[in-house]
Structure formats: C-alpha cells, structure tokens
Length: 267
Image 1: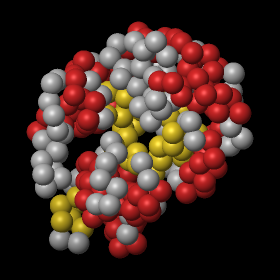
Image 2: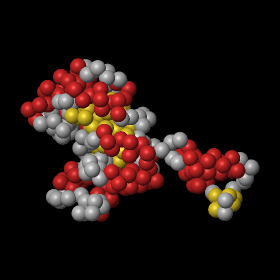
Image 3: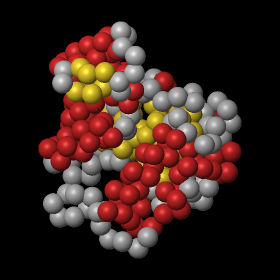
Image 4: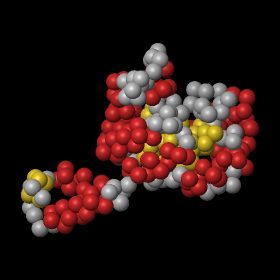
C-alpha cells in the first residue's frame, strides 16, 4: 500500500455534509470523520451522510471509530457500501484488529494511545497499512496526563517521544507518516514551524482542522526554488563522482544524496 494524497489533510465532521465539497476543494484530501468530531447520538446520521456523499473517493479518507468501540462494526458496514477505500482507523493498539478490512482498503492507522505508540512497529507492518499517524491529546489522556503542550505551545517530552516513535516505525516498514493536528487554529506561525519541522524530519503529510491551515501546511512542504536547484545540481554532480565528493564547500555522501532525492520528490 502507498500513500500519495498530498501534504494537507483536512478533517471534516461527517455529520456536516454541507461542508464536504467545500473542504475537499480547499485541501489535498478530506478526512470525513465518524469519530471524535461526531457526538454519539449523531453517528448514525453521519454514516448516512457518508453513504450519500457525492465527492471524489480518490481524495477522501473516512475516519472510523476505534476497533474496541461499539460503533466500529457499524462504521465498517457503512464504508463497505461506498466507493471510499482509504480509511483512517482511530486508536489502533493491536494490528490484528485491522484484519477486519480486506485487501481493497488502504489504512491510515492512528497510534494515539500508550499501547498504540508502543506497538507502532507491529501496526506499521500490517499489509493493509499505508501510513501511520499519531495524536497528542488522546495519547496524553491515555496515560493520565492533562496537556500535551506547554503554555508556549511546545510539545511536552512524552508527545515528542510518541511523534518520533511513530515516524520511525512507519519508515522502518516503508510506510508514510502523518503529523498530528495543530489545535490552536489562530497560531499559524506555530503551525508553520511545526509543519517545517515535520518536513525536515520525514513526515509525508500534516493533518489539520481548519481550511486556513491548509495553505500554511502546503507552503511548508513545498521546497523553495533555491533548494530545488541545489538538489538537482548536487545529483548531477554525483553522476561523475565515485564515493564521497566535495560540492559547494560541503562534503557529499550517499545520505546527502538521499536528502536531495527526497526534496525533489516534493518539488
């Protein structure tokens, strides 16, 4: 399974069908959410909205409730009756629970509890998993904490550990990693810094909760022209070299060339 939906993934509550088309027009892909964004008494209606949705299935992700939830079976039944085959599974802790999906699905597994983060490698190894995502708030709640961030917006160490663990687990199994949402919708500078760090660290996308966050994420994932020019030049120079060489005053070896290739993949 591969992930190639683009860098800005916008959540949209599945009980707000009037927002579906607009959300999809603004982002690279939309996540129609049957889980946290929908109150329990609205979930049945949200499933009906998924069934009736007239949007491009290739750019839609449906987030279903976690496998231990009483809503999981009904969510799966609803999604199976649609053309949507990219599914985000909330609070995955045991990869065996993903066997509920057949080979037609590409799964984005959310590692957002202590057990989910601890088992991230096994979850990433599941053949239906195309990407891992982590979530700070559910994680901290699962271990009895009260806040994933300091007052200045920085993540606490436990959240940073989970973020790194999920990223490395995904990469170890050749899967993509998706960075968590930035909940402060008005803190666009903080989001820009976080998204830039996500790109530099190796995340393939960042999820968001408001349309105004989309452009900030796209800008962060889009390499600047000077960086693209450098990447093309260093790769061209490497064609005539054998092993380590010097380029623009810098030592260049295979890891540097891999960085250049990764940058051009986003260009």
